[in-house]
Image 1: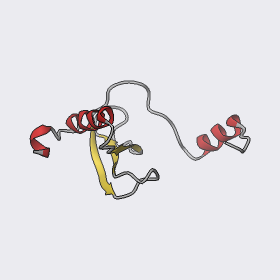
Image 2: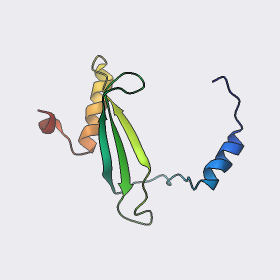
Image 3: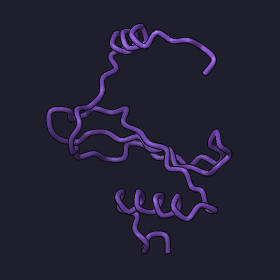
Image 4: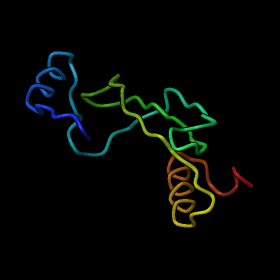
Length: 96
């Protein structure tokens, strides 16, 4: 990075915008949206997923997201991708 940031000022800006992080723990979530993206910033294929909490005191809370990137030439990354997909209910049978 070439810019200098005041992390304190940026955190205050985030607080004013209503940004807050979920406490560490387990949550029941559903996939709110999922989109296959042909070219991530790295040029790789990826799936952009946005989740929503469906139970408990944070029910309805959204803005939980992850980008699942597929890197076919990296065996560890491929394994990580499929473990993540299995966590979402898309096991080997789905992809077969």
